[in-house]
Length: 300
Ligand SMILES: Nc1ncnc2c1ncn2[C@@H]1O[C@H](COP(=O)(O)OP(=O)(O)O)[C@@H](O)[C@H]1O
Ligand SMILES: [Mg+2]
Image (cartoon, rainbow, N blue to C red; front, side, top):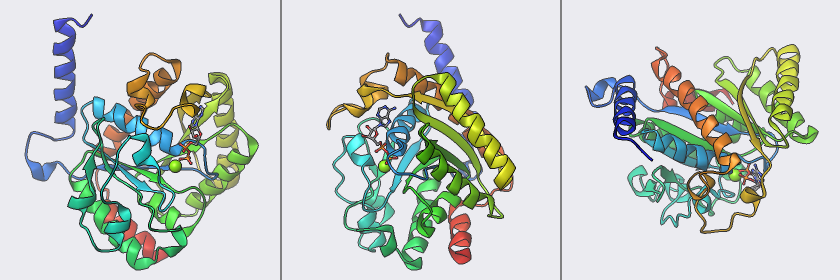
């Protein structure tokens, strides 16, 4: 049962959030979105699953959220949202369409720029494409509170440039050694950059929360000792057949199975991520995403 007082509390909570974000006041004070990159060393760790579900959770908390599928050519975020986009990154980077055309609203609230299938690999993206992406991200950031980048796995320069354009990185790993070793490789690569985003770890497909924490402790220790890079813990998500058996057209877990334990773990992550987003939003002196990305393009 939802009491009237609960509704009032929820409304005033949202008002508080909006005030914190500077919305409803002078538009010039709003600033642009906080950009969060979902990254991994190894593919298939659950970046797209987490990006889409956490985007929905942040939207439910009153934030204007956009997911940008940066896994060019292999992007599947639109499928997880059950969306059938007319235009994608392919049209944007090909210069045929503008941000206004490629930005769509999903049935679950967040906006989406789909990855597209016309770009066969990251290797086909040159500096000009990356500059176009930087400009587009700047425009998308102007219209939202949070932009979540569903990035390609690995250390390819285009993928690292995208990750480094973010203020926050959510590194998604599984507990097994191959995923952890590859996650460490990306962390080491990030540690060599002058302007580094904060790194937060999600241990996905963890058999239990204790193993999630223990996995973080091991990676955190190695990252600090050998790469001089501190990392933070965002949380663990259980291994759950409800995720892997989800069929095309079924609603994302956060909407379709709100009571299951995996959804509860996801809601915990949404709360932790929201707190980081609000903190990043208030941090003064941060350059915009376009400038950060252009600086990275020049460097690589
Ligand atoms: N917590 C989980 N439990 C079970 N299966 C999962 C879990 N997280 C992800 N998966 C499955 O793993 C596969 C890869 O996930 P995906 O989000 O596409 O990874 P990525 O975007 O990192 O390549 C998908 O089939 C997905 O359903
Ligand atoms: Mg993916």
